[in-house]
Image 1 (cartoon, rainbow, N blue to C red):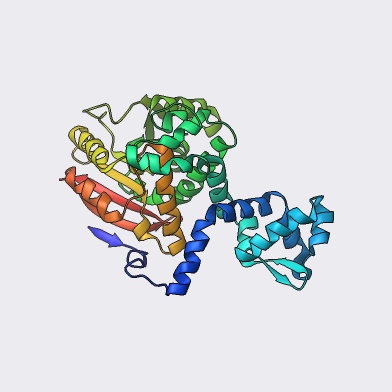
Image 2 (cartoon, rainbow, N blue to C red):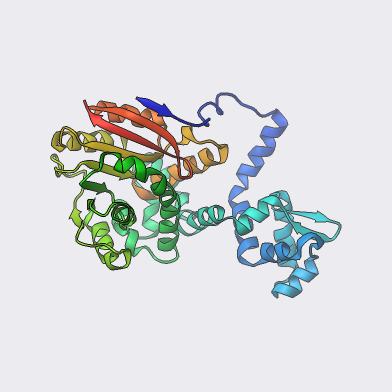
Length: 363
Protein backbone atom coordinates (compact mmCIF):
# COMPACT_ATOMS: atom_id res chain seq x y z
CA UNK A 1 0.00 0.00 0.00
CA UNK A 2 1.42 3.33 -1.03
CA UNK A 3 0.65 6.08 1.48
CA UNK A 4 1.12 9.71 0.56
CA UNK A 5 -0.22 12.12 3.13
CA UNK A 6 -0.09 15.41 4.93
CA UNK A 7 0.30 16.24 8.58
CA UNK A 8 -3.12 15.41 10.01
CA UNK A 9 -5.37 15.94 13.00
CA UNK A 10 -4.97 12.32 14.07
CA UNK A 11 -3.19 13.08 17.34
CA UNK A 12 -4.45 16.51 18.37
CA UNK A 13 -7.12 15.09 20.67
CA UNK A 14 -4.81 12.90 22.73
CA UNK A 15 -4.76 15.24 25.72
CA UNK A 16 -6.89 17.85 27.49
CA UNK A 17 -5.17 21.16 26.61
CA UNK A 18 -7.27 23.53 28.72
CA UNK A 19 -6.75 25.02 32.16
CA UNK A 20 -9.72 25.00 34.56
CA UNK A 21 -10.49 28.65 33.78
CA UNK A 22 -10.26 28.06 30.03
CA UNK A 23 -12.48 25.00 30.39
CA UNK A 24 -15.25 26.75 32.27
CA UNK A 25 -15.15 29.60 29.76
CA UNK A 26 -15.40 27.12 26.91
CA UNK A 27 -18.29 25.39 28.66
CA UNK A 28 -20.25 28.66 28.69
CA UNK A 29 -19.50 29.26 25.02
CA UNK A 30 -20.89 25.79 24.27
CA UNK A 31 -23.94 26.39 26.47
CA UNK A 32 -24.86 29.46 24.44
CA UNK A 33 -23.41 28.33 21.09
CA UNK A 34 -26.80 28.13 19.33
CA UNK A 35 -27.45 31.75 20.29
CA UNK A 36 -24.02 32.83 19.07
CA UNK A 37 -24.69 31.09 15.75
CA UNK A 38 -27.99 32.91 15.32
CA UNK A 39 -26.36 36.22 16.25
CA UNK A 40 -23.66 35.64 13.63
CA UNK A 41 -26.35 34.70 11.12
CA UNK A 42 -28.28 37.88 11.91
CA UNK A 43 -25.17 40.06 11.69
CA UNK A 44 -24.58 38.64 8.22
CA UNK A 45 -28.16 38.51 6.92
CA UNK A 46 -29.15 41.95 8.18
CA UNK A 47 -26.15 43.51 6.44
CA UNK A 48 -24.36 44.68 9.58
CA UNK A 49 -21.12 42.88 8.74
CA UNK A 50 -21.33 44.11 5.17
CA UNK A 51 -21.65 47.72 6.35
CA UNK A 52 -18.70 47.35 8.74
CA UNK A 53 -16.66 45.72 5.98
CA UNK A 54 -17.39 48.62 3.64
CA UNK A 55 -16.55 51.17 6.33
CA UNK A 56 -12.96 49.99 6.49
CA UNK A 57 -10.66 51.33 9.16
CA UNK A 58 -13.03 54.10 10.19
CA UNK A 59 -15.68 51.76 11.57
CA UNK A 60 -19.26 52.78 12.33
CA UNK A 61 -21.28 53.74 15.40
CA UNK A 62 -24.49 52.03 16.45
CA UNK A 63 -26.47 55.05 15.29
CA UNK A 64 -24.76 55.13 11.89
CA UNK A 65 -25.52 51.44 11.39
CA UNK A 66 -29.09 52.01 12.51
CA UNK A 67 -29.52 54.87 10.03
CA UNK A 68 -27.87 53.00 7.16
CA UNK A 69 -29.88 49.79 7.63
CA UNK A 70 -33.20 51.10 8.98
CA UNK A 71 -32.88 48.81 12.00
CA UNK A 72 -33.43 50.04 15.53
CA UNK A 73 -30.38 51.01 17.55
CA UNK A 74 -31.53 48.47 20.13
CA UNK A 75 -31.42 45.66 17.56
CA UNK A 76 -28.04 46.77 16.29
CA UNK A 77 -26.56 47.08 19.78
CA UNK A 78 -27.62 43.67 21.12
CA UNK A 79 -26.23 41.96 18.04
CA UNK A 80 -22.96 43.90 18.22
CA UNK A 81 -22.56 43.08 21.92
CA UNK A 82 -22.88 39.38 21.13
CA UNK A 83 -20.57 39.93 18.19
CA UNK A 84 -17.96 41.33 20.59
CA UNK A 85 -18.26 38.26 22.84
CA UNK A 86 -18.09 36.01 19.79
CA UNK A 87 -14.96 37.79 18.49
CA UNK A 88 -16.84 38.65 15.30
CA UNK A 89 -16.45 42.41 15.70
CA UNK A 90 -14.31 44.69 17.84
CA UNK A 91 -14.82 48.18 19.25
CA UNK A 92 -12.76 51.35 19.49
CA UNK A 93 -14.68 53.68 21.75
CA UNK A 94 -18.12 54.03 20.19
CA UNK A 95 -17.02 52.83 16.76
CA UNK A 96 -17.36 49.18 15.74
CA UNK A 97 -15.15 47.32 13.29
CA UNK A 98 -15.43 43.98 11.55
CA UNK A 99 -12.97 41.46 13.00
CA UNK A 100 -11.08 38.73 11.18
CA UNK A 101 -13.73 36.17 12.11
CA UNK A 102 -16.44 38.56 10.94
CA UNK A 103 -14.57 39.00 7.67
CA UNK A 104 -14.70 35.26 7.00
CA UNK A 105 -18.37 35.04 8.00
CA UNK A 106 -19.14 37.81 5.55
CA UNK A 107 -16.79 37.03 2.66
CA UNK A 108 -15.51 33.44 2.77
CA UNK A 109 -17.44 31.14 0.42
CA UNK A 110 -16.78 27.99 2.45
CA UNK A 111 -17.99 29.62 5.67
CA UNK A 112 -21.09 30.96 3.93
CA UNK A 113 -21.95 27.54 2.49
CA UNK A 114 -21.40 25.84 5.84
CA UNK A 115 -23.56 28.38 7.68
CA UNK A 116 -26.34 28.11 5.09
CA UNK A 117 -26.30 24.32 5.44
CA UNK A 118 -26.54 24.53 9.22
CA UNK A 119 -29.28 27.19 9.19
CA UNK A 120 -31.44 25.82 6.39
CA UNK A 121 -30.94 22.06 6.77
CA UNK A 122 -29.72 21.22 10.26
CA UNK A 123 -30.63 23.84 12.82
CA UNK A 124 -34.15 22.88 13.86
CA UNK A 125 -33.87 19.13 13.16
CA UNK A 126 -30.77 18.92 15.40
CA UNK A 127 -33.06 19.24 18.41
CA UNK A 128 -33.84 15.56 17.69
CA UNK A 129 -30.23 14.41 18.17
CA UNK A 130 -30.81 12.66 21.51
CA UNK A 131 -33.87 10.87 20.14
CA UNK A 132 -31.90 9.84 17.03
CA UNK A 133 -29.03 8.45 19.09
CA UNK A 134 -31.45 6.40 21.14
CA UNK A 135 -33.48 5.06 18.23
CA UNK A 136 -30.78 4.71 15.57
CA UNK A 137 -33.05 6.54 13.11
CA UNK A 138 -32.87 10.08 11.65
CA UNK A 139 -35.62 11.49 13.83
CA UNK A 140 -34.92 15.08 12.78
CA UNK A 141 -35.90 14.27 9.20
CA UNK A 142 -39.53 14.46 10.28
CA UNK A 143 -39.07 18.24 10.26
CA UNK A 144 -39.11 18.03 6.43
CA UNK A 145 -41.36 15.02 5.84
CA UNK A 146 -41.91 11.30 6.30
CA UNK A 147 -38.99 9.41 4.77
CA UNK A 148 -36.78 6.63 6.09
CA UNK A 149 -33.63 8.51 4.95
CA UNK A 150 -33.00 11.91 3.42
CA UNK A 151 -31.69 10.63 0.07
CA UNK A 152 -35.01 10.00 -1.74
CA UNK A 153 -36.13 13.43 -0.53
CA UNK A 154 -33.18 15.53 -1.70
CA UNK A 155 -34.74 16.84 -4.89
CA UNK A 156 -38.01 17.71 -3.15
CA UNK A 157 -36.69 19.34 0.00
CA UNK A 158 -38.22 22.81 0.42
CA UNK A 159 -36.14 25.82 -0.45
CA UNK A 160 -33.74 27.06 0.74
CA UNK A 161 -32.87 23.68 2.33
CA UNK A 162 -32.58 21.95 -1.06
CA UNK A 163 -30.17 24.50 -2.54
CA UNK A 164 -28.09 24.67 0.64
CA UNK A 165 -27.75 20.87 0.77
CA UNK A 166 -26.52 20.58 -2.81
CA UNK A 167 -24.28 23.65 -2.43
CA UNK A 168 -22.44 21.98 0.46
CA UNK A 169 -22.19 18.62 -1.31
CA UNK A 170 -20.91 20.11 -4.55
CA UNK A 171 -18.52 22.59 -2.93
CA UNK A 172 -16.46 19.87 -1.29
CA UNK A 173 -16.70 17.17 -3.96
CA UNK A 174 -16.12 19.37 -7.02
CA UNK A 175 -12.75 20.55 -5.77
CA UNK A 176 -11.55 17.01 -5.35
CA UNK A 177 -12.69 15.79 -8.78
CA UNK A 178 -10.09 17.71 -10.75
CA UNK A 179 -7.26 16.40 -8.56
CA UNK A 180 -8.54 12.82 -8.86
CA UNK A 181 -9.02 12.67 -12.63
CA UNK A 182 -5.40 11.79 -13.53
CA UNK A 183 -5.50 8.89 -11.05
CA UNK A 184 -8.80 7.65 -12.42
CA UNK A 185 -7.58 7.58 -16.01
CA UNK A 186 -4.10 6.15 -15.43
CA UNK A 187 -5.38 2.76 -16.60
CA UNK A 188 -7.41 4.17 -19.53
CA UNK A 189 -10.76 2.79 -18.38
CA UNK A 190 -13.47 2.12 -20.95
CA UNK A 191 -16.39 1.94 -18.52
CA UNK A 192 -16.77 3.67 -15.15
CA UNK A 193 -19.56 2.91 -12.72
CA UNK A 194 -20.30 6.15 -10.86
CA UNK A 195 -21.92 4.71 -7.74
CA UNK A 196 -23.97 7.27 -5.87
CA UNK A 197 -23.70 9.53 -8.91
CA UNK A 198 -26.14 12.05 -7.44
CA UNK A 199 -26.83 14.88 -9.92
CA UNK A 200 -24.27 13.62 -12.45
CA UNK A 201 -21.53 16.17 -11.92
CA UNK A 202 -18.90 13.45 -11.57
CA UNK A 203 -20.01 11.75 -14.78
CA UNK A 204 -19.75 15.09 -16.60
CA UNK A 205 -16.15 15.46 -15.40
CA UNK A 206 -15.30 11.99 -16.69
CA UNK A 207 -16.70 12.40 -20.19
CA UNK A 208 -15.17 15.87 -20.50
CA UNK A 209 -11.76 14.50 -19.49
CA UNK A 210 -11.73 11.47 -21.80
CA UNK A 211 -13.52 11.50 -25.18
CA UNK A 212 -13.89 7.70 -25.26
CA UNK A 213 -14.90 6.70 -21.74
CA UNK A 214 -18.42 5.51 -20.98
CA UNK A 215 -20.06 6.17 -17.62
CA UNK A 216 -22.98 4.47 -15.92
CA UNK A 217 -24.60 6.36 -13.03
CA UNK A 218 -25.88 4.01 -10.34
CA UNK A 219 -28.02 5.49 -7.59
CA UNK A 220 -31.42 5.21 -5.99
CA UNK A 221 -34.28 5.78 -8.47
CA UNK A 222 -35.03 9.30 -7.22
CA UNK A 223 -31.44 10.45 -7.71
CA UNK A 224 -31.10 8.70 -11.07
CA UNK A 225 -34.20 10.54 -12.25
CA UNK A 226 -32.66 13.80 -11.04
CA UNK A 227 -29.44 13.08 -12.95
CA UNK A 228 -31.45 12.13 -16.04
CA UNK A 229 -33.41 15.37 -15.84
CA UNK A 230 -30.13 17.27 -15.54
CA UNK A 231 -28.61 15.46 -18.50
CA UNK A 232 -29.24 18.14 -21.10
CA UNK A 233 -27.88 20.94 -18.91
CA UNK A 234 -24.88 18.81 -17.94
CA UNK A 235 -23.98 18.04 -21.55
CA UNK A 236 -24.41 14.28 -21.27
CA UNK A 237 -24.29 12.29 -24.47
CA UNK A 238 -24.79 8.66 -25.45
CA UNK A 239 -21.73 7.70 -23.38
CA UNK A 240 -23.65 8.25 -20.12
CA UNK A 241 -26.28 5.73 -19.05
CA UNK A 242 -28.44 5.43 -15.94
CA UNK A 243 -29.04 2.45 -13.67
CA UNK A 244 -31.54 2.82 -10.79
CA UNK A 245 -30.38 0.68 -7.88
CA UNK A 246 -30.61 0.43 -4.11
CA UNK A 247 -27.24 -0.96 -3.10
CA UNK A 248 -28.66 -2.27 0.19
CA UNK A 249 -31.27 -4.44 -1.54
CA UNK A 250 -29.07 -6.50 -3.85
CA UNK A 251 -26.68 -9.41 -3.47
CA UNK A 252 -25.08 -9.28 -6.92
CA UNK A 253 -23.82 -5.97 -8.22
CA UNK A 254 -23.91 -5.04 -11.94
CA UNK A 255 -20.70 -6.15 -13.65
CA UNK A 256 -18.44 -5.04 -16.47
CA UNK A 257 -16.87 -1.84 -15.15
CA UNK A 258 -13.15 -1.12 -15.25
CA UNK A 259 -13.52 1.33 -12.36
CA UNK A 260 -16.07 1.48 -9.57
CA UNK A 261 -16.03 5.12 -8.48
CA UNK A 262 -17.45 6.22 -5.12
CA UNK A 263 -17.15 9.86 -4.11
CA UNK A 264 -18.51 10.83 -0.68
CA UNK A 265 -20.71 7.74 -0.96
CA UNK A 266 -19.65 5.20 1.64
CA UNK A 267 -19.97 7.77 4.43
CA UNK A 268 -23.72 7.43 3.84
CA UNK A 269 -23.74 3.91 5.31
CA UNK A 270 -22.96 2.07 8.52
CA UNK A 271 -19.83 -0.07 8.73
CA UNK A 272 -21.85 -3.27 8.28
CA UNK A 273 -23.56 -1.78 5.22
CA UNK A 274 -20.21 -0.68 3.75
CA UNK A 275 -18.90 -4.23 4.03
CA UNK A 276 -22.07 -5.60 2.41
CA UNK A 277 -21.86 -3.12 -0.50
CA UNK A 278 -18.17 -3.75 -1.17
CA UNK A 279 -18.62 -7.52 -0.86
CA UNK A 280 -21.39 -7.39 -3.45
CA UNK A 281 -19.13 -5.46 -5.82
CA UNK A 282 -16.28 -7.90 -5.26
CA UNK A 283 -18.44 -10.88 -6.27
CA UNK A 284 -19.31 -9.30 -9.62
CA UNK A 285 -16.27 -7.27 -10.66
CA UNK A 286 -13.72 -8.25 -13.30
CA UNK A 287 -10.35 -9.49 -11.99
CA UNK A 288 -8.50 -6.41 -13.23
CA UNK A 289 -11.11 -3.84 -12.15
CA UNK A 290 -10.35 -1.19 -9.55
CA UNK A 291 -12.40 0.50 -6.87
CA UNK A 292 -11.60 4.16 -6.28
CA UNK A 293 -13.01 5.65 -3.08
CA UNK A 294 -12.84 9.41 -2.54
CA UNK A 295 -13.68 10.22 1.07
CA UNK A 296 -13.29 12.79 3.81
CA UNK A 297 -11.71 11.39 6.99
CA UNK A 298 -11.65 13.64 10.02
CA UNK A 299 -8.35 12.17 11.26
CA UNK A 300 -6.60 12.97 7.95
CA UNK A 301 -7.31 16.69 7.93
CA UNK A 302 -4.51 19.21 7.89
CA UNK A 303 -6.33 21.73 10.07
CA UNK A 304 -8.29 21.32 13.28
CA UNK A 305 -11.16 23.41 11.88
CA UNK A 306 -11.64 20.87 9.11
CA UNK A 307 -11.81 17.97 11.56
CA UNK A 308 -14.27 19.96 13.69
CA UNK A 309 -16.49 20.56 10.65
CA UNK A 310 -16.52 16.92 9.62
CA UNK A 311 -17.35 15.70 13.11
CA UNK A 312 -20.21 18.23 13.22
CA UNK A 313 -21.55 17.06 9.86
CA UNK A 314 -21.42 13.47 11.14
CA UNK A 315 -24.22 14.48 13.50
CA UNK A 316 -26.23 15.59 10.46
CA UNK A 317 -25.97 11.98 9.27
CA UNK A 318 -27.17 10.84 12.70
CA UNK A 319 -30.13 13.20 12.96
CA UNK A 320 -31.20 13.83 9.37
CA UNK A 321 -29.59 11.58 6.79
CA UNK A 322 -29.97 7.98 7.93
CA UNK A 323 -29.24 7.60 11.64
CA UNK A 324 -26.28 5.24 11.33
CA UNK A 325 -23.43 6.71 9.28
CA UNK A 326 -20.76 9.38 9.62
CA UNK A 327 -17.47 10.75 8.35
CA UNK A 328 -15.22 7.93 9.49
CA UNK A 329 -11.71 7.73 10.81
CA UNK A 330 -9.52 6.41 8.02
CA UNK A 331 -8.54 3.24 9.89
CA UNK A 332 -12.21 2.31 10.36
CA UNK A 333 -12.96 2.68 6.65
CA UNK A 334 -9.80 0.76 5.73
CA UNK A 335 -10.88 -2.04 8.08
CA UNK A 336 -14.23 -2.25 6.27
CA UNK A 337 -12.48 -2.37 2.89
CA UNK A 338 -10.11 -5.11 3.95
CA UNK A 339 -12.92 -7.09 5.59
CA UNK A 340 -14.68 -7.06 2.20
CA UNK A 341 -11.80 -8.84 0.48
CA UNK A 342 -9.93 -5.89 -0.97
CA UNK A 343 -6.35 -4.71 -0.81
CA UNK A 344 -5.59 -0.99 -0.75
CA UNK A 345 -3.00 -0.39 -3.44
CA UNK A 346 -2.73 3.35 -3.01
CA UNK A 347 -3.75 5.65 -0.15
CA UNK A 348 -3.28 9.34 -0.94
CA UNK A 349 -4.34 12.43 0.99
CA UNK A 350 -4.62 16.03 -0.14
CA UNK A 351 -7.32 15.99 -2.82
CA UNK A 352 -9.48 19.08 -2.97
CA UNK A 353 -10.12 20.54 0.47
CA UNK A 354 -9.13 17.45 2.43
CA UNK A 355 -10.22 14.30 0.62
CA UNK A 356 -8.36 11.01 0.59
CA UNK A 357 -8.30 8.70 -2.44
CA UNK A 358 -8.15 4.96 -1.78
CA UNK A 359 -7.39 2.68 -4.73
CA UNK A 360 -8.52 -0.89 -4.06
CA UNK A 361 -8.24 -4.23 -5.87
CA UNK A 362 -9.72 -7.58 -4.98
CA UNK A 363 -7.45 -10.02 -3.17
